[in-house]
Length: 324
Image 1 (tube, rainbow, N blue to C red):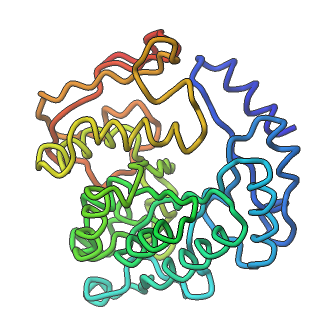
Image 2: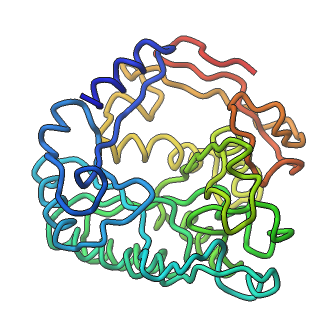
């Protein structure tokens, strides 16, 4: 019923294609796998526990077996909740300087390794969301070498910022989960994108009302808005610097995501494909201004950052739905 409601609302909105993702467990309580086949029949394209991990490995294994049978991917947020201990930024030198509790790399890496092993055993197609550590990159390489059906993504904030960029213990626009890591992690993520280990650049878009962010770093909500800055940041940080080509940017932001989701009619410009297109102008250089965002969410650490390149048009089914 919820899947149908989402699809009905989406079709009544403005024609933008919304692809629902089903939960891994009933009520996201981590205790009982959902009926993946029934959810797929209703219209989901993947299963995920969204911003948390299924801590019971047997429950997760059963859900992965169902996903493998239904031929849909499992999207994984990798976080061992037992190791978080109230952390709100990366554990390390900067956290000590700011007097804030830290989140270690092991919080992500332990679950990343487990999920890869479970995918290897079950034959499930696993997609790792918002990877943030150098160990995650190495684990993805290892998983792919084993022949696991495995893909992984990096977010612009994780390749454009490190924990050293957090200006103060009060600026919660720099609070996200997983957190901004060290420069060594950033370098590994960039190298993983360059050599093809990491397949996708995704936003992990998390808009919050001002009241949810205007709190202490320990109490504020995790997450930043990402959609409206993602193309410019990717072009500025990775294409202008010669790390990726323009075509590799398109692959990681469009073609590869479509392939992972099995969307054969999207992700490429060709006769007979759906004309879901973004027209990107690589020439303008400007300063990001959160007050110009179309989104109601303004929570970004990139306000005031100079970037190059902007989205001029977005087309859905060949119709212009956004114009700069």
